[in-house]
Image 1 (cartoon, one colour):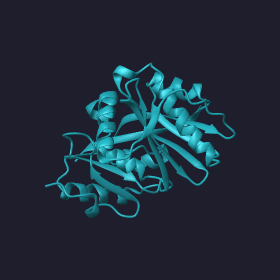
Image 2 (cartoon, helix red, strand yellow):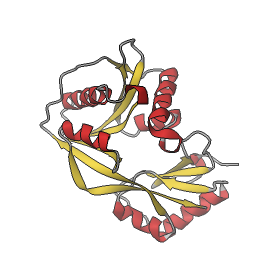
Image 3 (cartoon, one colour):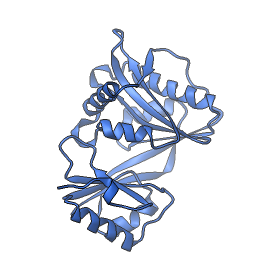
Length: 236
């Protein structure tokens, strides 16, 4: 039986069942302190704890290449490479050109999770627990739906704020609503909120091959950074 994250990890990492439908035998390991550079001994301790807890495989969250070295030495492989984009203040968000509403209730979060799975597929989608976790990853956050003409959620975004730093934590648009401006509506809403709080730097990441997302962010003033992020995985 797989145990919960409360029984694994330490101040450096958080471990939980992989937040994808039907994949709870895979652990998700997230570095809580992104500045930390794990040692080989730490990685082996985390792996031992996950094996003892019944996990069959592990996948990390997005981590910096420097932090990845100990994982790669322990037999992890690269599952995904993420482009990192940055927007610096002052920035001028686009004017509102669509309807949005807050993601408020558990039912709303479930609706966002359905959009996420439709957009990203069963392997990389966020379930409701992962969306909730993203909303609590920063001291302040904002979650919004973009609505279609009938007022139904077509896409959603989670935006985080920590001091003067902003983060587009997650953005997904359902396949039937893609290329209809919903991504731009959500990015604009996020940037207007961040500007009101005088955020100085906004970061977002996306898969290096996700050309529509890269174009969306670059149209809104984001620039590609040289450094990339890695998602790593291995069997246990």
